Length: 367
Image (cartoon, rainbow, N blue to C red; front, top):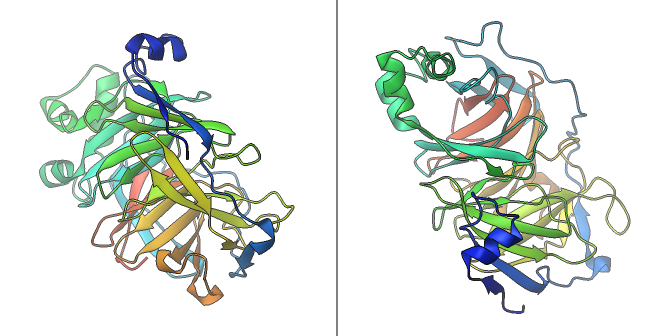
């Protein structure tokens, strides 16, 4: 791989980004050559996992009153058993009605106490990140048990300029980042090895980029421009394992790989450059119509492929040599929009769903 080229001046970056105030200070690297290693398509194969495909459907809401005080739940209808129950009802309104109503991704700290939620502006490729101190919100204000409406109420009162002293205390544990170009926004992921936050700035594109986001300022601080190869587009999802390896997946459009197969890519995202390779074995059957997210569970050392009401997972140690029996899959009730799943180091799993936005937790740590 050829060495990446750094644009060192703020002026150059401002020119490159059309004078964007948010990204003008981000260090920008232009990687030369292909970031994707060569492969022989004739050697590609798939494992015939159980078909738990869920077709696209009309999303349903989970509430009759947005200020819910009692949890709802969804459960498996097919496949590996699991039940997810409301854990945190996330804000929907902050400055104006439903302006936080379009969450796209989540990233969770190892201990499960800090949540980064990426929200996009409706009909836009721009958005922002909200950082929640879940540990404090749970222990001080009972947002996961005794006062489940408190967080949504506080953010709503912020919009109506009618905040109580309790509202103000709650919102001290919610940090709102600046707006920036997020792309679709569903790829926000934390590298557990170094604590870095990354997202794909131009998903489903040949000329693409990944961007690192500061966990304090919540805005991009590094951007790497690259292309995988001229015939391969970047996926729209991203995750990292405990060793710092990066992954994304796409669905095959046919040709040398079966149509609808899950293609898995593995690589590294460094400080100035990226590299990936295609794992030469994919999944014959995808979980659903739209790839919503990818995740990694360190406790079980498994990779997860998320679609709406359908999640598949595989052991990371068996990449490229999977057996059908090692692929797990689950279909869920509820017809919610699945935005992502994250895992704390103890195996606790947290599913981000929409309509309205909430974090749901599995009732056991074995999913």
